[in-house]
Image: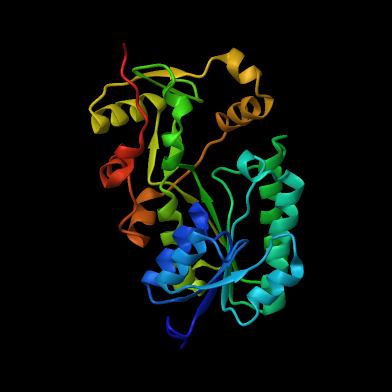
Length: 296
């Protein structure tokens, strides 16, 4: 039987929210982590080294670097940037290529477990580029002779820190219409659930898990934010005209409001007892990151 200290997990995206959460959760369990980063000389990479990770440079677009990084690993955590994250400057075709590259590197290394993070409630045929690329990566992962687990996280609580949602003083202006229930999760909790799956690969092989720590309407989010910050917030939906000016976001909202995500939160909390609700995330430091403005 392999012990934690003998196991080695390659974590892609190790300086990002999900990969960083997975790396920290694995290290806290005593699992060896090989952290793949684009800039091994940066401070985020140095922070991982201080925690005990073996940091290696690599590029998701470079199969050779991925195969070198995966060599000798027992498992791989796979996450890619997407078109829905404009700060990374990637296309949906890039995301698909990156996801396949990681899966191929895992197969070449003969790993025992590949954990891929996708998105909540995913269905094909949405017409949204980064939804389709994730669906195609899921299909590719399932087609390989590699034991896999697919994680489908909901919206990150960290999304709520974006200043644009608080531009109108005293108001939380969100993307979805009143009454629409949204699955949310803390980025670190995705990593913790991944670590739990890596600890029991046979139990999680072939499974797809929808992830959330809370499922809330926009009105409930606004109320929770108001309580935590001490500044009551009204709820409003982003105006249709503003959405029309950004066709990608408009299509994402249209599709997302039709998705029905079935999340078994009690089972997830049994797997990861620290799974946070919005209130718990706010209490744990999230409230200080909410850029609320007061009405004049």
